[in-house]
Structures are given as structure tokens and as C-alpha cells.
Image (cartoon, rainbow, N blue to C red; front, top):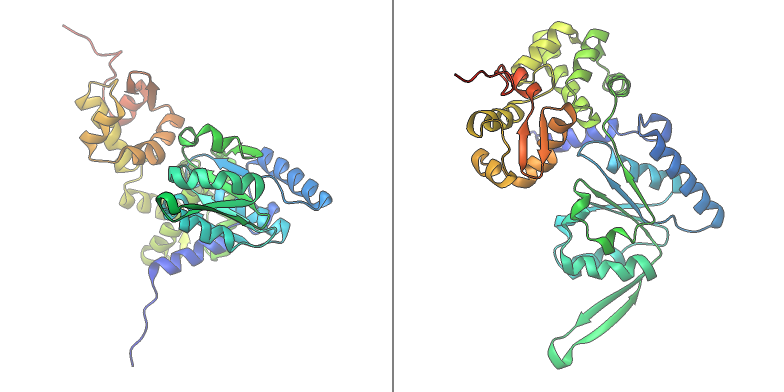
Length: 335
């Protein structure tokens, strides 16, 4: 008899879904945003209207998708999840919009990656709940107007500067999600550990929070990986020694930097004399996509003060030199 193997991606997604907060009280941090969203939702309920379209922006893993789920739960309505790169043609967008019901929420992640055609098509949908489709070509072309259900669009982006002004202006409220404090990350780790049924010492929680890059998604990822080390190399408890062993194996240092982060800083220091270096030259030297550097690596390096962004390019700071064991430019003596 053959045994069907579980898809590890499905397992990971299921765990992430369990760890996702199910109510406002479980969502740690972003207090100002939560307060504003509660007001928007309650006011909409009293008026028996849909809430305004909402836009969330910030670094990956800060909870934009979770906020969208919580808004839907609070409104007791359905939510449809998609992403900008998945909406390639007007027909893709039309299929999404026409399958919504009154009061539904459409969540578009990476909304800055919508094509220009789809972006222009979504304007009347957001304003008048109408969809204008062009059928046929040339002299036979006709514009078909479809009436849409009244929905709320929630957009999320890591690159708000790439959103056109007309699209940004159509959102009734825009919120920036900030990095979390270490104490907030500790609360998230304790909650996740309780859900996963794993014991974690306070010393280990301190180490995980220090290396979590101020980001809940990364804190949960590290907790899950250390759980593996605790089960294989320990007695199932994540303590200080297990945490240190796990971080060393994963190549994560005391600031939460991984080898890819250190490679960026070393490249700027060693190959570009500390900078400034343009993002295109840096990406080409590293063999990385520009968007990957801008969205994944750079925000945290800037937050720590290891990297400085100027109009001339990126510069490695004295702190970066010190962390990697180099003598900073300001301390180098020329003979």
C-alpha cells in the first residue's frame, strides 16, 4: 500500500495559518493602525456601508495580510486573496471583480506590480463599482459596462513609491506598518510557542527576538527552525544552548544578519571602498535582482544603521565596518 506524502509547503502554510492572529487582541503591535481601523470599521457598520478602500505598506512580514484578514473577520464578510503579478490581463481582473458579492473584500498583495492596463481598469471599479471592458478591435470595438457588487479593496505593497498617484489617491486610508519593538516580538514568540506546543526558555526568547529583524514572520520562522534543533539535538526544549547551536548552523549572527546580508555589506566595503555605489552596479556585482535588494535586504540594514542611502548611492557605515571586522574609513591612516 502506497502512503501519500504530505507536501511540505502545505504543512508550512497550515502552520503559518494557525499562527496568524484570529482577533484584534491577538495581534501584537501596530497600535495606532489597529485603533484607526476599528474606528473605520465601526463607523461603516453604523452607516451600513462598506469601509473605504484601504492601503497597507511596509517591509515584508510585518502583518499586512493578517490585518486584511482581521478586517474581514470584523466585518463578518468574505475575503478574496490575490497578488498583483497574478493579474496579468484585463480578463483576470474582470473574473475577480465579477465573482465578488456585496460587502466582500478583495485583497491584492504587491499591488504595485499591477500592469498599467489593469490599473486603469480598476479606477472606475473602485470609484463607481463599474467595469469598462472593450470588446472587439478597430471599427468593431465596443465598450461594455458591467455593474459590480459594492466591495472594499485592500491593497498591500512593499514599494509605495511605485504606486501611481491616481491609484494611491483612490484609497480612503493609507497606513504604514513599522518594524516591531523587541518586547513586541517577545510577546509574539511566546504566543507562537504556546500554539506550537514547544517549551522555550526566556534566555532563548531573548536570543530569537534579537535576531528576528523586528519582523513577526521571521520570528516565527526562527522559532519553527529551532524547534527542529530542539527535537533532534536536545530534549525538545528550546534553551539558550539550542538557540545558539541553531543560529550558528543557520549562519545567523547576533544582529540577525544572514550570509546574504553580510555579502552585501562586504561587497560595498571591499569592492566599492565603502561606497557610494549605485543600486544597479551593486545588484550586478552581487548577481541579485534590484527588487530583492530593495525589498528584502535593504530595509533592515537601513534600520540597523549598517547602510546609508544617499543620492549618489549606498554607503556602508562605520557600524558595518565594525560588525564585519574591518577598519572603518574614518579610522584608516594613510601614509
